Length: 251
Image 1: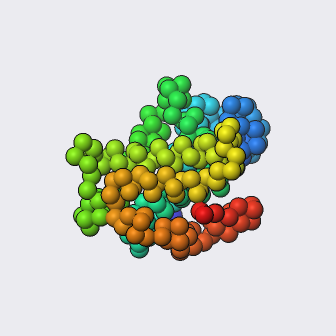
Image 2 (image 1 turned 90 degrees about the horizontal axis):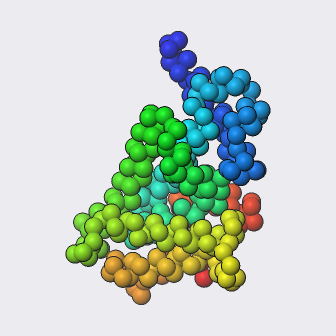
Image 3 (image 1 turned 60 degrees about the horizontal axis):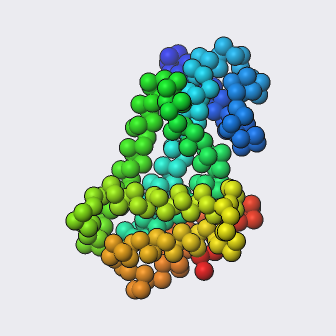
């Protein structure tokens, strides 16, 4: 490895150390309480060194958001590669979003902060470009499943809609259900008795049946199918969930 590559590797490793420390602080205290001074206090680097990596608190938040997208994208890509029907792959991808939210609550919450105009206005152009690129790769993964479904004659997108709109409709169900029902996050009032993964599967089956995405839920047991898919694609994550006293219940 050349000196220049060693220097770049050290720079990236140091930046990841700062990100990991920030994420730990967010997990413990919440993102609203984070300041650059608090981050400097928990990392083995000087204030000047930290500012060599990040313009300020907002730039750091955007970097955390970009890291969050990378973690989520990995789960999505693994879901998309599952050797099942396109509908199973789409269901698995959206359930993997719940896995992400439960195992990485600080990242799940940080992504919303990273989208605020105040963060955008004080972040580096490079980090903004990185976010745009990462979001496009996430969208490519989701749209790829829809396009495969069309190609396999398992889905015909309604004439008044686009592939993007179909993807958006699935995203809103996942985000809404997780935000309102996840035990591991703050629940909404009136949610007693509702299990987030069960309600997600119910809502997705209603939505995908409405699109006539084959096989329909009347023709396939998706409760069993998603359990099989989860064990195949996310065995490590299921172990982590179980260690935290969490096992998925779709019935």
